[in-house]
Length: 101
Image (spheres, rainbow, N blue to C red):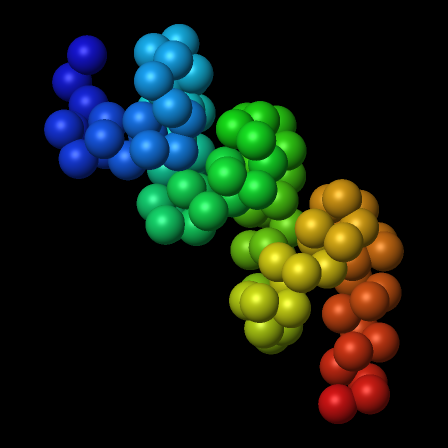
């Protein structure tokens, strides 16, 4: 199907031997990377979001916006997970943390 060998191996390590799940992972990863997101961030996000393209896209978009605002990457990931991608709650928490630092 044109996927690099290393990418397929990595997908199999993350998704197991079920070829349908491996292909789903590869397809979603490719679509998110085509949207301009960093491959490493996409892979990490897909693992956190159980390969849900919708949740991963929302997470990546919010993380990008918050990063542009100057918040730390690790803090962004933490609050987005904590608040299940709720933009307002995550931003409020990031602002509170920044104010207390």
